[in-house]
Amino acid sequence: MTKNRFEAFTDAVVAIVLTVLVLDLDLPSTGSFQALYAVRHEFLIYLVSFFSLAIYWNNHHQLLHGVKKIGGWTLWANNLLILALSLFPFATSWVSDFPSALGAQVFYGGVILLADFTYFLLCWALIAVNDREVKEHIHAFMRKTGVTVAINCLALVIGWLIRPELVIIIDGLSLLLWVVPYKSIKLKKS
Picture (spheres, rainbow, N blue to C red):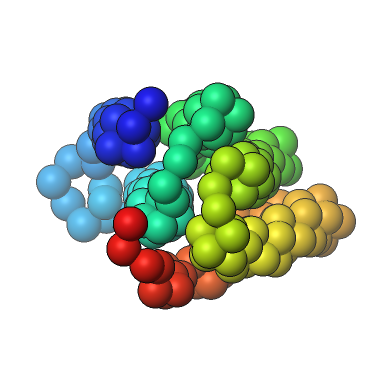
């Protein structure tokens, strides 16, 4: 499979997931600001989920920028990443309905952890089929993903032990590590 087809498929799935995410938003019950304020939890978790998905998509693009080969394991790792990303609308909806519920918060944090873990698997699969220069590019993403996975695990423990809302707060703050995509090394033209 060509890299372009691989990226196009992922782009299409992420676009669909973002569409499903916004379609699940409920309108305020009236045209007043009070009605808008009443759905603030739903809107805030929507924003966190939207920016999470946008960050995954941006960094997926940046990761693949220097990649030259796509292998069979790469396809499966990417499909697992897409599976994790496709769970965002469900997790978002559950948390927006039950913003202080431990189960909903832990599930949402688990979706983020799964997405980060599968992103790490995608990096590993890309390393297996690419040359040394590209591997250096990918290792930077793996290091950043490792830090994020550790933060996700910490968020789940803190949310479980202290307060459920801390799962999304800590995971949301961990997104700041990814807002500016990694500046890849200058790869030689093939």
